[in-house]
Length: 396
Image (cartoon, rainbow, N blue to C red; front, side):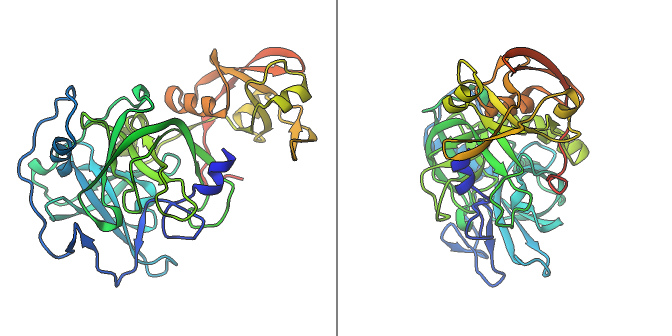
């Protein structure tokens, strides 16, 4: 994960080292939409075809069937914000009730009661933020104006756990304010982690937490694509475009999307309650390596070495042990002596990704899970009752 942490941050124009896909535009900038000025009418697509969810569509048909469901999301930060200006991103229709899904970082810092939604035909409606979750980089908007029912065409969510590397995907959004843009590519990786920082506008390198099960794609995505859908060839949402891997801020062939299964789990709660509680184990550590396994006497290099159990956290309360013996291994200092997590609820753990993915997909706050750990040459089970993940502001 360390290589990613160094190069994936918030992909916006906040600071040179951060790359979020939100697009910050100075107030005096004229936004071009599809090659036309912002106040010019766009071509109106009047016909929409009902999704079949079975047949593979051509790229042309896929765009025709989904373009009306993808919107441009914009908001303005307050003048006392150091990044004052227009925040521009993408979003997609979630249901017939006027709910729209976008990224948290697209609307972060903007007036939550004054968001603008622009449809492909150029019509603009007011919306407000009704729910946000920094830990998944998701936000739910609700269109406040009286929008004609035929404009609210929701995109269906696919089962992202069924994705395979090599599967064709399409990204639709508004890169650099160019509305109605589509790019195509493949799923180039699965089960990635992208970091969540305490302050998206800072230069802090170490993330507070990570988003698991992230989809990697080579479909070109750029600033302004954030919040737009990543679609399979049936026109179903498999993810929400959120970040790119880059050292310059430009697309370098590696993009990331938060999976649709996370949207399916979190969005309904955001609509109902405005916030989402993530289950929290309260450990930090490092994936097992041959060097570490040899140093601690673990026969096979597998699992996750606990370096620290957050004081007073769920794991600490349950008796999970962190490291207490600093040792130099492979050119870095590692605290040995902590438990090695080998399984969670009888599911093998190869690395921390497996733990984070399982916690997000299959557990909830207050649930008791069983960790199988290697400790002092013995394998034991430890029951841990999951807590609610602390806010980013409260994170150490």
